[in-house]
Image 1: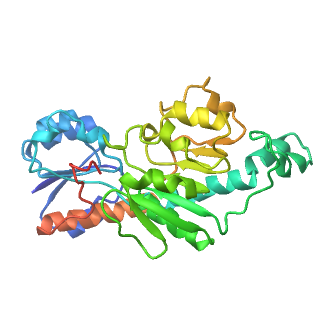
Image 2: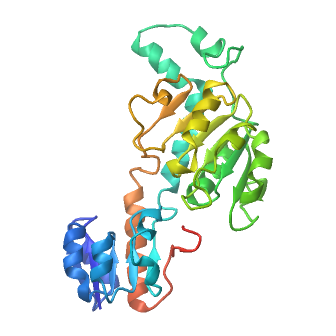
Image 3: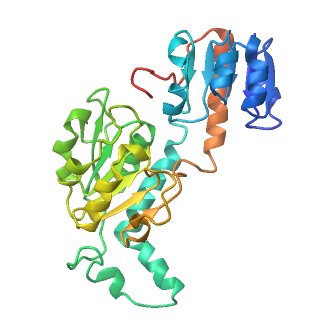
Length: 326
């Protein structure tokens, strides 16, 4: 058995070999090197592209290093590789993503971004923080999240962890998910994806943690923002294309939503002249929400355990449902 492994953890190949005795592990530095080695390989870990898929006649398993899979599922020929099992890094980025989502909500609720602007000006002035909102034209003090309602759209890895933390600070949490109405105890109500618009008017903080699928592409649009509270905060960490950027921009400009924290955008990167950059009630980070000092070690544990399972003929973890797209 031969397995091609991307060199994501230099110097740790021996640890992989320990769990897969007898497996020929070939470590490669990039996709081009992987394509040259994969012709007689049974699996490839950490890298996938069209060349690898075309050359890998014997491939039975691909382990991805990302949670999102839409660009891989679009590789020509993948649909015909019905016997190829794909696993991803679902839930690996959940702790960092959840803290990023709550961080964005707290920044907006407590106006830390405004305080940082004042700090750079060396200006001690409470009025921009507690006085009339610069984007709603009405009196609005600093918000408390405790006791307010969070709507989590997409109760997967990041969504579930975000819900856990929000509940922990005293928020009421409701959510939607595509697969069922089941959810953890700290989520008060789980609606189906088709019931999203019914829940939007209840939410003070909305966290979009959706994967990108044909059903979610552009889902958060004009109809959605017609129902948001004017004080609501919208946070998105899943995929930029799930949000209609023009509809969001208009809702912010017209005061139909209180603020937004965007870790993902459409397009991405966001053009430097886009109006979202200059809005005082928007914070933007460059698609790093799931990154942390812990995610690579969690990914290492997943890769190692899945390699052990593959070598032993056991079921793999984090198998991608191609039909659902995640």
